[in-house]
Image (cartoon, rainbow, N blue to C red; front, side, top):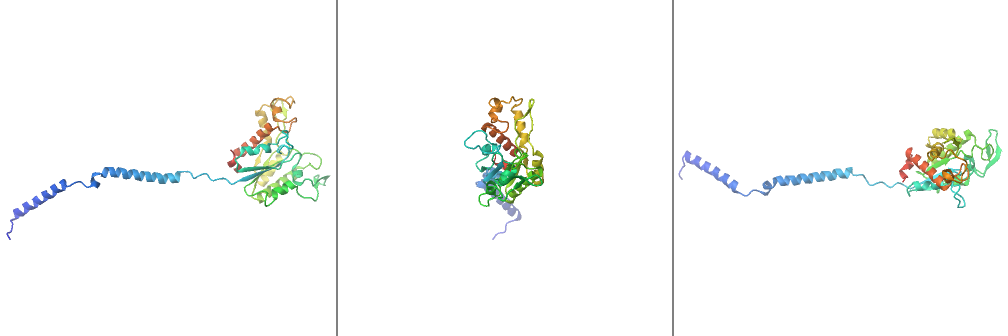
Length: 307
């Protein structure tokens, strides 16, 4: 075996290096190297899409949760009551209330004409006699059937329901059985509120709706028991809708005053029956609208059901 000289060995090494470089440059480029820019672009796009999907999934609002069905119970006098015998006058605003809510709300109107808060609660057991405190004496029969129905554990008020309470028009009578004094009125509002809360329902007090009374060109307030209703609401932590003020404010918006006393024509005649107190269907509908707007404006949770 012949030994190569050092120069020869060096020359062979250089030749080998050149050969390797040429072969490498002549070899076809691997797919990864040839498409690297495009592949990176596509991969980046996929990453962005995936990230967007993940973000969107968390950012998209969840489907609206269905609200549970609730019942709104109404307790009040003729200005709230359903018409009787198919008549259109008088029509209480309670008859028109349901139309402002979704189908998840059932309105049960137990208002009845001529009642004070005490006669509504205790009919027919309020006597015509007064006790030493000047309040009408209640006989031994106990609560009225309408209040017992609301208290019934099976068919009465349930958790989540509402109880709207509006009295104060007949309560100012000086004679029994309708007469109710200031302290007694506040006491009975408290009794009703406590009973509703004990069943998981939400009481709402309303001041009495105003009659139409004008002072020149301005409709003015004309009902009592406003202070009592607000005071009881504060004492028992119950929301109060000042329907008295809201109603005569509506009368001013509708320009009912000055009024010539004719209930058979004009805007007043279309709103009221042939008196200063009770509503035709049109008037009842507008008062119900005022109450529903107050529910929304005061952010009473029942507002979630308004149309």
